[in-house]
Length: 140
Image 1 (tube, rainbow, N blue to C red):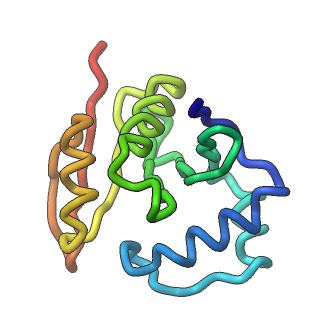
Image 2 (image 1 turned 60 degrees about the vertical axis):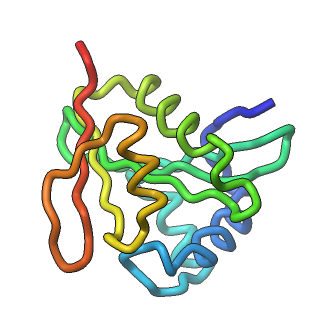
Image 3 (image 1 turned 180 degrees about the vertical axis):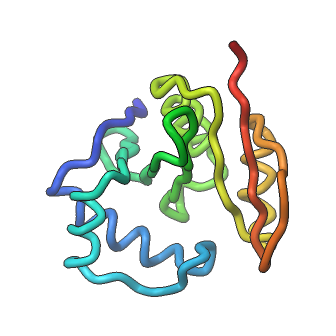
């Protein structure tokens, strides 16, 4: 069974290890410390843990762009990628938050992620410095 829930403080080690293992796919290549991770946890960025049969397999992050739109993204453990988990998690969070627009950025070289985002309805808006800005407008 797959679930998504708000991240708790005891999830920080899992979150930090997964986030740092995904730097090749991220804009910010810095490997972060636990102190920096705790800072994120206490900010306005919201994190959700994805669990499969009680085991954490990934997370979704959201942050406000405006009052009516949100930046969104996800990271999944390598052994659970390409199984529909990220699609399910992103769609679930967007349905739950009910904002009219969602945005994300993906590296041009991350073609697998770009295809995933297109599959769930994101459209390319622009390209800059090796990144693609994508947007999804929700149906009313």
